[in-house]
Length: 111
Length: 111
DNA sequence: GTTTTATAGAACCAAATAGTTCCAGAACTA
DNA sequence: TAGTTCTGGAACTATTTGGTTCTATAAAAC
Image (cartoon, rainbow over all chains, first blue to last red):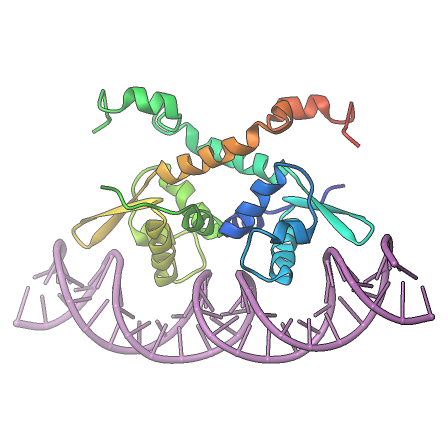
């Protein structure tokens, strides 16, 4: 049974630009800590810790192949955020939707 | 011109359950700090600070009517998060979509 | 004009966070 | 076996955070 991940942890993990960049990098496929660290002016250890935070938040899982620990992105917490956002999409009949919003802008703007 | 709000600030603001509860409360309409504080076992000052964080993140704006400073929810930062999520929706032909995901689970799970 | 109400500023504290450096262990390579 | 590579643990530091209390200020109410 998957561990229950809190929105607290997910949002906190995403609040750091380095971690978001790591996540974005993982869209291209699995990567080792060393590979993930390469673009940053930080120690490998610092990146390792960031990956740890992402893992703690359920946004990343790891599988060790040899010494390399490969990280892969996990989408479930992002889905949870998406679901959380649902509660705010309703407000103002679709004001949340970008297309609706663009069409509506300047038209019948509510007060 | 609206101040540029960073995803950092938005995610950080949303990482606290009290602040998310405050936001949810504001879906029902504007409220003063004292009103927002009522459901919580925290000092009014603590809530005032939370509202300050939300304001800093652009999730709340305030208008003072008399001594009461009324807070109202602002959706733009949430829209920004929604847009950020777009980058992850594409992954795995709709894996992000909840329905798709449920249907796919246990079928052709990629290794 | 005094008192009450609603909020923010200032000072403080404990805990968490992001970073570092150094060390240890696990697994390849020669 | 010895050396190299990849990563995490431990210890440390500086900064940020979430909370408190006490005080100040601004507007209403009396």
